[in-house]
Image (tube, rainbow over all chains, first blue to last red):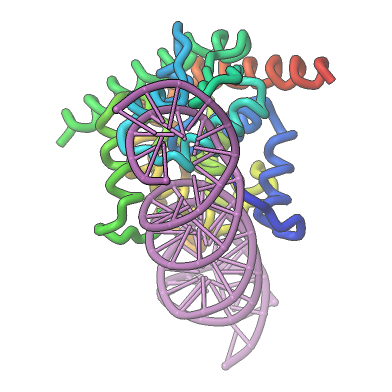
Amino acid sequence: MAQRKLTSTNTANREKLISFCGMTYAIDILGGRWKLLILYKLEGRVLRFSELKKHLPNITDRMLTLHLQELEKNGLVIRKVFAEVPPRVEYQLSDSAMQLAPIWKQLEQWGLEHKARLEEET
Amino acid sequence: MAQRKLTSTNTANREKLISFCGMTYAIDILGGRWKLLILYKLEGRVLRFSELKKHLPNITDRMLTLHLQELEKNGLVIRKVFAEVPPRVEYQLSDSAMQLAPIWKQLEQWGLEHKARLEEET
DNA sequence: GCCATTACTTACATTTTTGTGTGTACCGCA
DNA sequence: TGCGGTACACACAAAAATGTAAGTAATGGC
């Protein structure tokens, strides 16, 4: 997310894993506390920074900024800046991100079921 | 993963997110550098600790132990201990984890495609 | 008695992620 | 002239994840 020391084993391992398979790569660019949630909220609509922020519970400006930048860098969201004052910036999903939508829906469904199963067992 | 200070905003936010939707819950129990990879390696077979370790590049004993414990706690892997010396412990996927398999396969596929798309654009 | 084996555990160090607080540029409006 | 609004940036602090190195228990074989 922030800067990485290039000498760290930590980073080296991550890099190895990313090239290792598509799944690890996907986890890398979708991981983190907010990324999937941001994508989820952007599904089927265009939102500006402040709107997105309202949709996400307890996120800070900084976190939203950082995650949006990474998502943009990884080709998952499209950022449009309008030359207005006060500034207006709109975010929307890329085609690639839209293709991901059915997968995160299944994941969500699985999550709900799995959670229910666990709670049942007690 | 390790111990958490119960007073932290960080933890509070995570907890809020987990109950927020199935997807965030899923991310929470499947996130981390190695979890999905471990599940992936366990698909369709039973492996003991040392075997699993051989299948995972650069993982340390500690990381494997910690992640396996969390996976077990969250009902994703089943741990079987044999009363032998030297010890033998076998790991396998739970039913719930098996239901997740098609999803991680799609995720892997998407990861590969997305990566290819990005590299194409340059 | 000594060593190898296995699946860990513990203490500690480092790296990475997340949060907090403050500042800024621009303009229109009162 | 001062204020509000927007989408950030920056410096710093805290928390969480990961890595490293060293043990440990029990037992069979030498």
